[in-house]
Image (cartoon, rainbow over all chains, first blue to last red):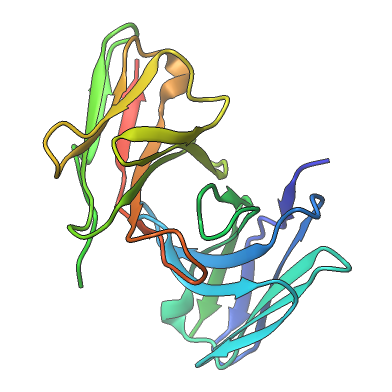
Length: 112
Length: 115
């Protein structure tokens, strides 16, 4: 079983829709959970950072962590064409970001 | 917005040749990383570097790889004798310190093609 699993998509939704992106993980040692956005041929850009279980909201983005189910989610409200990118979940076991384990990424397209 | 800069953006090299990928991390950052992404695959951790020494490395980072911070600003990744399977996008990253909520900033990557 892979440490971090993420549906690669592709996922296409109409503009304005709510997008739900998810990752599951197998190692209960993961404590810090992140979502990165990656545009084609660019480096990953941090969107959201959560520690342990719970929700975190930042503008149109909400990150959820359910450690009991080993499941994390990213919700994008009022999706825009500029949100079209690959979304990577990442997690780490130690304080901070010493070594990130990434999911494979979900390719998202928002259709105008 | 400060950024991590990487050179070259793309390099083609012959198998067996040495390659050096260069990075200029953000100036007040103390922790430096290299990650790689083989085409179509996930981003993978290679190595972390702090206080002029490697703090952690993955099983990918074997004796063919080395890192160096030669002059206090550049951070380099050297691949001694490249193999076909080293073809990937290599990302340099940095962070000011390792604490909860700190952002790792990634560069735009150096695309390495080994032929």
